[in-house]
Length: 269
Image (cartoon, rainbow, N blue to C red; front, side):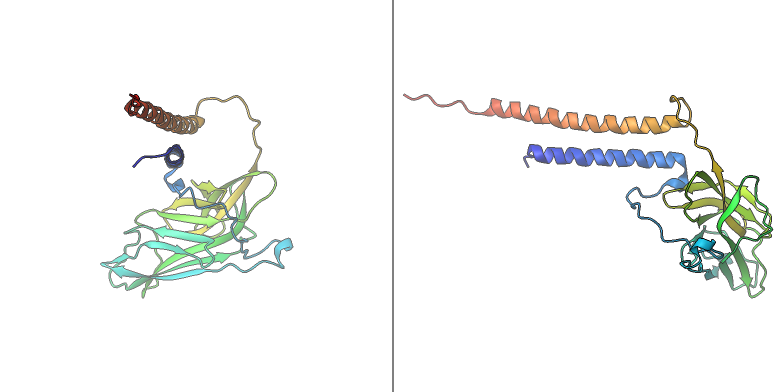
């Protein structure tokens, strides 16, 4: 099938978009495995946050947060894996296969994600404060009623946080066993989706800790973490330019071949 210049331009645009998508996907994968999200999910604002104890200016419009309660079946002594979230999706935990192994005589595991207000006597790392709700996440064996003390494999916890205006903020997941003394754990903050994700090895109380930081003045580019970003963007641009150049070369070559194959006009006798 013969392609017109318009078709070739559309093809070049499609190939360029595909190359750019792959480049950005590789960049997100370089940043973190948890950052590998679809690039075309859109940027629609999330619904309003549901506070267990709303700020005074939001009490009239606040809706109470919703819990999540699940019964995990046991198969060969291993609880069902999956993604379990509150009904408003403000907190979720992803249990991997063999995360919960039950002792003999147990039939199921009761998993609950319960939103509560941050306690007034909570202790947090210096310079941080709790934003949003505290979530008490528990797993209890049935029928014994014994709590799951430790996960056999790390689970992935995700917490949504309320939007914050003003200064730049850093957000981390805070964990606690008693609901009072919180410590910071390694986290990934997705500001577009207003959520923080972390790996956890045990259940308990979890919240989002926030700390205001000053934004540094932009300076001259230097080496370090910015190198992979620059490399990916440059590689994508070069790839698109090569594709477009190759298509133009093919078009010129096809035009020259067409002129050479054109039959010479017959002479009149």
